[in-house]
Image 1 (tube, rainbow, N blue to C red):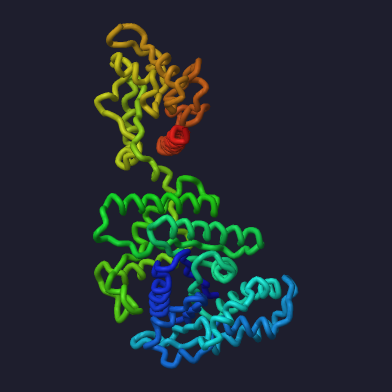
Image 2 (image 1 turned 45 degrees about the horizontal axis):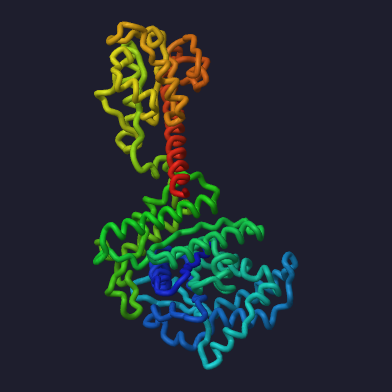
Length: 483
């Protein structure tokens, strides 16, 4: 079973058709199966211009418009669920005669093109007079079944869709494909248009019971790396990454921790003034080894083989690291050192931080540390509960440490998340007793034979607390900016 891939752009001038043409050539080189291109941009067909040197006489060939007009005139009305499969199959076979072989020297003879239509003096009139909505009502299952017919006979079918939001565009982007390449330039008009289309295509699939998966591949195009300030480029990259992440969360019901950053770091089509004139294929005759627009298309082709383009990075949107404080007794330094080692990766990724000089047992706390803990300044406080901690005396006052009061005040401030590690069996009272006990409430760390498993439980809980702190911070920021 082959794949149907539609290339769509909300506005013209994005390089959508050029992207499809180069992608088709690369796919035909990398695969033995047949690759079909369909020019469904009926009002402004241009796909064939890239292949005129390799298909003499294509101007005399009919195309997809002629194919659909004939279907309307010859096929009877077929309500949804009552399709005449034999009649549709017989009619679909006519598209083989419209598939023009593209013979590129040095390539396999497996690339084909279906034109938009035969362009005589009546072409414009035929486009304007054909009622796509009426035809869809006549045979609702026509286009999904055409897609299946083509996928059974071609390894790849690439459709060049019309721009804007139209009936024809809806067929190309919603009824036909399994994969949707949404081409946009880094400006709000272009971006907003493809984002809206992505939502509409996903909604159509859900509302009409089409259970085929729809994989979406955003493609920034005409990206200019010269003559543009780095700050402006990074601003727009951050903007469209954020908007696509939000859209993917909505469409695929994904968590807010997904990231498309790595995807967009490698998937884009750069602006190359060498291809601003004429219709040249960038991937001919061979792929250059260095960075180039041809390599951009090659990376896109490799990415199209993967249906999931996002990564789950729970800490990807953390703007600045969160401070961690440790509450422990002098006798409990070994588990504290283990905790610091476990946190090493998060620290190296700028998710959390602490000042090693301030990692002191409660016996050595001065007034400054006490006030920081009580005020909730550290976003995360790790408490190592033990009999040593409950019995700890301050080296300064020679009295029992009042760490419980300071931690309780931190809990009440609701600006700190408390992670409580139970080192041994002990009686816990007050506010701290309401906190989750790790590794588990019934089994302190000292009773675990497999210490690695215990620390895995602790770290999973800690990472969840980091995510909660981050969500709380973003929520607070959103409320502040709203007011």
